[in-house]
Image (cartoon, rainbow, N blue to C red; front, side):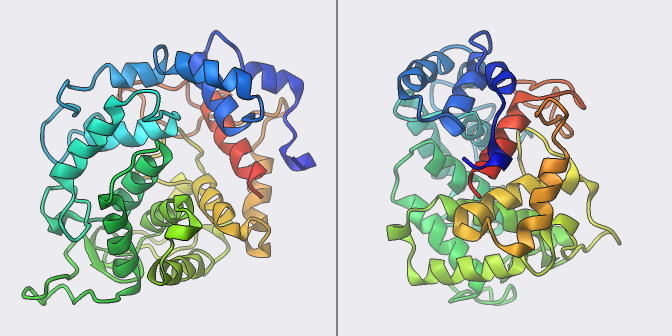
Length: 334
């Protein structure tokens, strides 16, 4: 651990407070995994007490949250969001096997035979942010299913354009739709321009994939995605914006959990996991992350989903364990 990622004893004690089992486990898992003896016990406790347990407690016995369908609505309590949230809390299939049943149920209802993960059921509902979020979440939780590679294959094809017909070619076996409208992260919700929020999720998902599973097409997609995220200095977030003249201010608001709204921490996490943590083009963003650290070496909760998902994670503009864990994890990956 270099000096930029040193965690002072006072901050470490705050993160590892036994009275907060969810944050304690996540900190041990993400930041202090060398403390194996503590981690194993903390993992068991966190799956039975705290936010992970709270979310799991809302799951229907048949393996879904809220509605027995494709799991996108209502935001942010249905199956898609609950699965994403569980992964960001560090939930693991090996500890709670019913997570596996929930992932399988979700794919049964939301994934098309060609690998598109849909917000509406059919493949026309495919969007980059959902595709990347779900794949990253399921891999993180240790879920094993051959359909995940189908999802990665579609994600790589749709990014590169390899074998995917234009949106108007309705007879083609594989084509773009009104959401995922074209190659290079083009998105209907971003006025048909490439969407950096979607790009961050896609690249994060690719970063979770073992090297042995990275086919030549996936490697090509990763290279293309990295090139896109570095088409500007990430610290400026000056990516194509089809609706406004300036980037969303949410890029600079660090939050928890992270759904489709994205922040610079997540771009830095994805790029550093892919081996670009020391790239000079990322240096300004890393400086920005460090500059947002408080005097007592913590980070604030600047963006949240209070009252919208199963659990609240602190008060806005206050020091926040969940965001602090995200920030230190990203810095440790450099």
